[in-house]
Length: 119
Image (cartoon, rainbow, N blue to C red; front, top):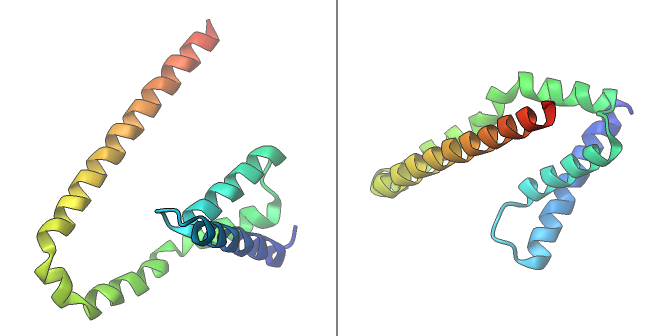
């Protein structure tokens, strides 16, 4: 798989997720569903093609640049953020805590599963 094909695959998965979310009126972002579709496809395939690995490594190396538009958006709407800082802060704290709890629960379950399978 070439790098162009890999980028095309990533964008097609994102588009499929976006279309599915719009058609079914689902309450989460389309790119998240697209990422899940890509993950399932890779699980079925059983390996990551070299081109896709190269593209994903490149994107991860330059991940900080992807936060620039979000930062600009925050500055452009700073009045809204200043007005609603308390609900934003609460959402950040609760979602971070929830992510940590879920991660710990999954890790504990995987450790127990692995220790049982090793016996």
